[in-house]
Image (tube, rainbow, N blue to C red; front, side):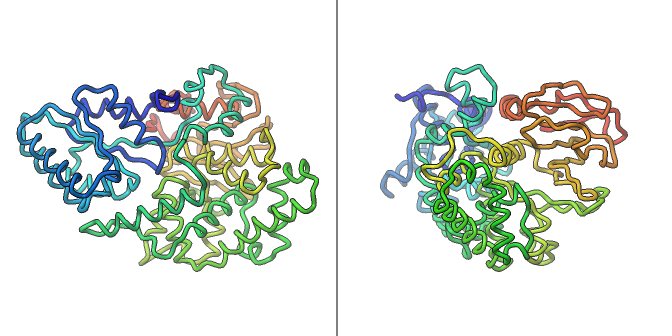
Length: 481
């Protein structure tokens, strides 16, 4: 067995712990994040377990397996069933519902079932309908920086090892081929799940989408990290090219080939132009789809001088087709921050564009964009937004948690930040290149190197609770769980 398959991740231990506590567990998470490997590892280490991939067996064998599970539950047989690719049952929602009914009717049950599949949205909906909160839902993610260090047996948390993680993490995800294939798979599995559900899975529509539309959104998210294009910039090719070149400045300087630079301009400009010409309903559906696939984060960009009133929940508004607050493309481009959640996808796009000119080490704007996306994806998503005030901004503000974060990879001075513009006292965190001062200064600013902050967020679920709370009238306690 290779090191990739023998290395046990947090997902493995969380799932085993859930199995100890309940009879039904649902293993959820984005496609190819490691759910199958987790089930196979449990099958190798757990007594009386059996692993089945429904996608790889015949319909008759799948039906026979279902009947055997029901029989074992009724007879209280000590066995753990590990069922992968559940959506490939002929009637997966009915299978799950009947297993839930059997488990609920056996008070001395010893049979346990773990369900997993690539369409986590459908599985979660079916789990909630069938088990009404009596099943454990375990959420997996792609390999984190802290897990990668453990996998490589490295103790050094540094800019170098973080850069190595960015470049090597894809090799850990052995099932990942190309970004196009990945997005196409997400769509195909969503269509299949929608066809197999007996009730509508809310906000799971994808009839307006293809992999190119989704990919264009991800390209737009990259450029928006540097300077959010307005609707006018999308239709002014010269302004758009200036923004692209600003974002790719480091690459342009190192390449030195006008022909390659023109290729980069064309790829980005064509995709951004295609993105901008889609109708608002298609764009809304694309954002909801990518968000539910756990590939992007969505943040509201506050109006100038906002006092935190009426902050929009972007996801809920995008799902509201009857009274949407974001009802045109101008508002969407201006008011919504779209970030790629996992750095692996960010790096894949850069590799696709730069090809043989991909630098061996990321610096400047490209690294800063990855750090912002990565850190934003690890922070609490509820009640968070990007704060703007008199032309200044704070990248991440969470009102209910009393925390504000400035994403940067250099050593900024206090004057270069906008923390003092906030109308309340917050725990202010300034990411740095290498300054590590985790005791707040007179301006209530804590400084943490960007790679250390990302490591701590990915390594310790309780990390934010351990950061000192400022003396403020907003909250006396905080809980980020």
